[in-house]
Length: 446
Image 1 (tube, helix red, strand yellow):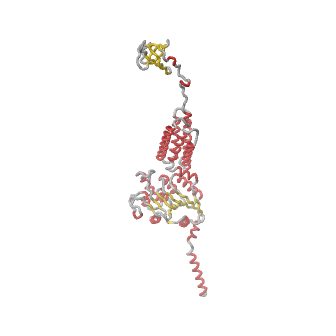
Image 2: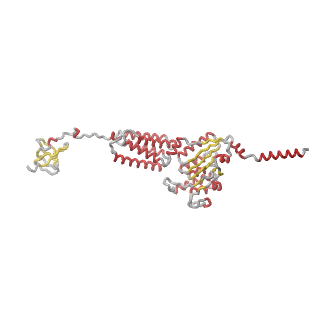
Image 3: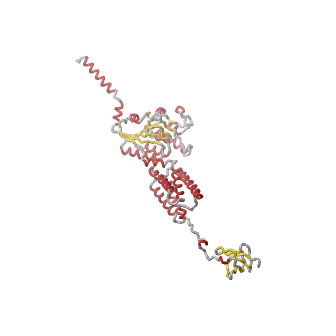
């Protein structure tokens, strides 16, 4: 039999091993779970628009091709275009890779919709989510049809991920009464992190990315951070609803000023740059295709040809081609119509001001407008002028009513009276000669 001392030692070491086993840090398990896994972190920042949509398409495709095991969308956006948010929501719903939305500051309006389309949501302690009413470009509430469609989209996004839809609806519909969450009737719901966890809209509150990866059991995973390229940054800027009318106005203004300028200068260069930025951004964002570029180039060529061919039809076709290319590049026909109208008004105002200030004496008009005159002073005459007849006398051979015939200096001529009726066989004198027009007056003394 074992001695009591040996039994005591065995019992002691067994206890030590047992305690060591049950007290192993859970982080070690988390690290093991994250080994050999790939996580893509994709930022969703600033305004939601088509440029952001194009960036997310590229980034998620890269993640899929790289074999990513998880995608984390770091969200900080005040919202933006509802149509773009809808496309992004479809993109997220179509991903087979698990997704998480990490709200680092705010996910408002369209941003909350994007978050709801993620599998899990985590929030920083100071983050917010909600306030998703549809607002038009002029700051007013959208029409009832648009609001109804948006509320349905918010509800659908929540239900697709197993979340209670009433809170998503309350984010977009102020008629929902949730006073316990600071959203009584008449106010859009905005969730704090604590509220979001309480109602099941967020899985947790984390301080930073490290804590988030720990919660997702991806502590030891390989992390790939994606960033927008310079081209995508430009595209996001120039496809903004506020920038588009400015670019088109600068382009039209540059063209009008250039027409009044000798040679090709700063104004024309600015106009071309504005037009280039518009189409460059819309091509990068996937809004403009090659057919739009072909129409633009064709329109410019037709307008140039119009300067050398009379008629105006070629110029109108050129303008039509350019307008068609603009509409084909725009995502929203209504907004593009407004932007083009603003640019047209700017161009008309500039043309009127420049015409009154400069006239048609400079620029391309100087070459296009015929300025040579065939005046008598320069030696041009349409027919032989009879200036030598002025002062000569004669006699009317027909009544002058006021035109008629007279014999002057032994020559039969067509003449015109100075306004009064002159009978036949009256003495006349020539008082004026204008080209082939000979003006006579009756001599009353005879």
